[in-house]
Length: 104
Image (cartoon, rainbow, N blue to C red; front, side):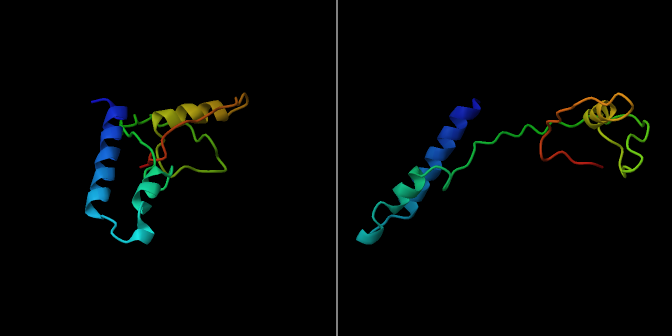
């Protein structure tokens, strides 16, 4: 399964469904569905891919930010970022994780 091919097939299937399910018989609305489907972002957004790999849990460690106590045990990627951001030699850090990452 190739995601880009699957996304194109799904889009074509939805377009075909909309065109055949809602045939336009009123001249005023003729071409409305086609115009809507051709406009970027009006019906289709994405494709988005989610592999939802589980995050590894970090082991208990120091309280990285005493002024901001954590109410959860951080995941390993969070712990590594906290280590870079805290302490006497804090370093610039870019954190890139999915918006669906959850804490315990």
